[in-house]
Every structure is written in structure tokens, then in C-alpha cells.
Image (cartoon, rainbow, N blue to C red; front, side, top):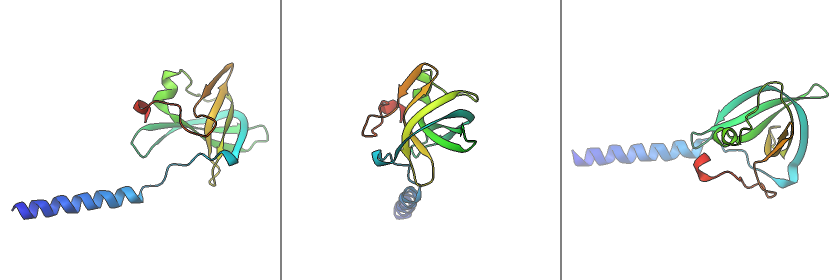
Length: 131
């Protein structure tokens, strides 16, 4: 029986590793693709990150009528800083445009407040407890 239990544990561990390797990658910040977008929040939503934590995202409608999705960062960090976005908010975001058109936010401004999400190199500024 101990061999059977050990075999089951080994198979479950291997299955977990295989699943972890197949999980989609989080978008990566690249300074060479930085853009500035300004628009009105038409949709605010959440995405679950690889670690199971909530990540805030929003769709901005730009002045030309086009739309862009922005990946802001940990929802708990935004709540702590009182910078959650709502539909109708006017936002200017500086960030890295990914191949899929998503903009990973480094800094954003809403009204007269600006929140730095990442440093100039694109490294997150939130603490580990928000990961």
C-alpha cells in the first residue's frame, strides 16, 4: 500500500508541474514599447493572475472612438491607494503595449491624482503581499 500511495503522490505532483508549465504567461513589461493613452473608462474588470490574485483591468475608449484594454495591477494595491477605476473616469496611462494590444500600466492619472505602479524599468512597486 505505501508504494501505491507514493505512486499516486508522484503522479499528482507530475500532473501539477505539467499544468503549471502550460499556464499562460503573464504579460511582460518592455520599456521599448511604452505608449501614453488617454481615454474614458468604458469597462472596469478583473483578471486572475498566475498566483490566483485579482488584477484590475479596464477598457479605455479613446477620443477617436477606438478602445484599448489596460492591465493596471493588483486590485488590493489599488484599493489601498484609493485609486480603483470606475466607468466614466477619465484616465491617462503610460505603459507597455503588448503584442496582443494590451497596455501594461506603469503610471496612471485619474483626476488630479497619479499612481506609480512600476518603476522606469517596469518593475512592480507594490509589496509582496499584493502578489
